[in-house]
Every structure is written in C-alpha cells, then in structure tokens.
Length: 479
Picture 1 (cartoon, one colour):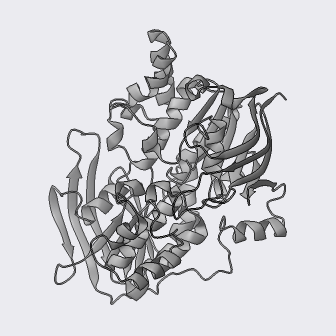
Picture 2: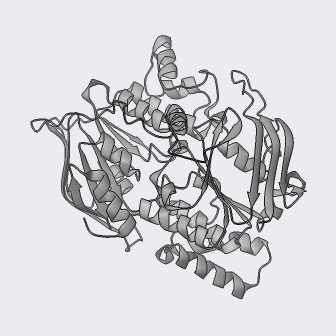
Picture 3: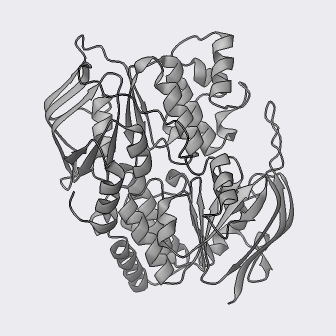
C-alpha cells in the first residue's frame, strides 16, 4: 500500500498567555498512514487531537504561532509548504465545532462552496452536490439554512461537503457523538467500503468501532500508543484511566425511582412548527419530568429532541397544547446548548462564573477546582472545546437550577468528565434531562428514556434500554 501521510517525531506547544501556560502538547507523535487506512485516534480532551488535525491541515502553527518540530508529509511533501486552501482535494476535515466551517445560507450552496473555489464546471458541480446529498440521505435539507439544523445534521452536511470534494485523506473530529448510531454506522461503513483514507478522532471508545475494520490508537502524554488487542486487560485499564470507557465497577449515579415524587414538568398535546419549514412538526402527546429524576431523550438526528428541550426551557414558544411546571409555576431551569460558544461570551473564566450572581471568591475557586477549569483570569476563547463545555456547566452549577437540560453535553468530553458533570449538577435532588445519542449513557444514568422520531415520542423505556435502542438504531426494526 502507498504511504500517503507520514508524521515523524512531531512536537508542538502553544504560545503562553497571562495565566495560561500551555504544556508540551504533542511530544513525539509518529504515524504512518497508507492509502485506504481507517484509523481511530482516541484521547481525552486537551490531549491534542484537534491540534494534531489542524497541524495536518497546515492551519497550525500558521495561524496560532507556537513551537513546532518534526515532520508532517503528504505524499512526501511537507504539509506546511501548502497553503490550507490548496489542500481541498488532498486533505479534508470536519471540525469538532461545525459552526467554524459553515459559511452559506443554504445546504446545497454550502456543499458547492469548495467546488466553486476549485473552478469546477457547473454541470460537474451540480452532479457532485446531488451525489453528496443522496449518499448522506439528506436531500430533504437541500434548501434549508444550515443555521436551522441540529448539531448532528450540521455534521452530516459537512461530511457531505467532503463527499463532494473527495479529498485523498478524511479527518473527522468528534463526528460520532452528535450523530444517531444508525447514521454514524452507515457513514463509517460507507467510507470503508469506498476505501477512503480516514483518521477519526474521538474522546470515547464507542461500540460502533467494533462494527468497522479499523486500527485504534490512543493519544496519551503527547504520543500515540497502539492498541492491537482492545480486549487486553492492560488496554482496558488504560481506556478506563483516560476516561475513554466507563468502568463497569464504577458507581454510576442513577436515582431511585420514586412514584410519589412531584411532577415539575407536564406536557399534553404540545405542538410546534418552525417558521417556514413545513417538513417538520413537533407533537408531544404526553411527557413529564418528576423532581429528582434523570431522564433522557434519544432519537435520530432531526427527530425533535433539542426542539422539545428548548420549548421546556422557554427558548421557543409553543403553538398549542399545555406545558405546565411545578405547583407554584416557578421552576428554574438551565439549558446547556450543544455548542458552548452560544452561551460563553465574557472575557474571563471568573466573569463567566459571576454572570447573573455574585459568588464569593471561595465559591469561584471551589467551582474552578470541581469542574477542572484553568485560572480564573484565562479567556474562555483560549480554552479547548471540552473545557468550554465544563465552564458552561459550571455557570449553571453556581446558578443552582431546579432542572438542567443537557443538550449533547457528552459530545467532545470524556466519559469521566460527563460523569463528573452529572454528579455535580444533580446535587440537592435536582432533575436532569439528558439529550444524547450515546445509548449506553442514556441507559446507565436515566430512570426513563423517551425515544423520539419525526417530532413525536414513539416509545418510553424503563428497562433493557440499551439493547432495545441499539437494535432500533442499527437495524431499523421497530421497538
């Protein structure tokens, strides 16, 4: 097989900023990628996965500065000799945060954006856009504004952009967390069938990787470690230690079911439709949340999970039906968006934690320690995606809400960190609504799981959740 990407003794360190001294992030990364290889690179947040991706794309240190050494070569040519825009047909990527990459106001023009820059003829461009929409099964999104899409639909759109551009190397950063398991498996299997060269970066060891033929590496302390036998006990210990899988012996928070608990949210015959989008209608016949319970919403991308969460949080206004809260109708809630940058906007960690209230210095310091945040004077813009998600949760922790709605809070963070967030937010018998595609997490933490499809709740589960939902997503069989 032809070696298409070679990384030798790569080292990198970000430049330091006041209050934030970055350690040596990459410390001797070696990697040889042949044409047609499918490689999964696991690593907990802040270990350098996204940085490695952006170095391969010739974005770092071009736009960040920092100290770099070693070699990264595409077909024997140093990648830093290419301008990033000259790599479109050579190396393509889907970033962890899809909003960093989406520019246009229509899905079809977004797919065509890179093709236009290549000077491609109109007929070929139209053919490639049609092909990309079809292979991702998102023809129905053709004229939708990407701003109206769910996080998972945005990831599908960006994968479609790569199908249209057809680069030699595909770099996929945390695309699985926000895709429903069935869609994710279909995409990965299709890439493998077409013998694409793929580097997939993930903060979790997911069951889906067992369904594809891939090489799995772990990025730890700046180097890539091989995991030839994932069932090996030493490898299992490493994955648990890094927070990449859940320790089966670990005590997972799952509240005791209390049938006498008061309902804090009750929904009957709730209807909602997005303005100008007649393709999607939300109708929730019956739904409730009780005090002190953790429940989950699962479902395919675009099934209405986030929409329901935003209606409960008052971020959208219902068209009809009833949405009532606790007896005094004074329920306080916190909605954690899929993208933390929708909620983080102040100059420092301290100012974010102080927004909306005036915690004491000791409370701020205690929260920084609990949520593993950097110095209080650090700008959030310099923090990793996962650290920004922890900061997002820490703000609501201090606000002490009755109900927390976590929209894909597990995306881009380790399982260990997700467990930490759940336990901290649950303090004092709070209620939590988890919106996630990780069926294992839904099963482990929830008293009940609601399955949504096409804007409706089609099933409620109280037991055997993981097996039943896995069957639904991977086979399409009814539940």
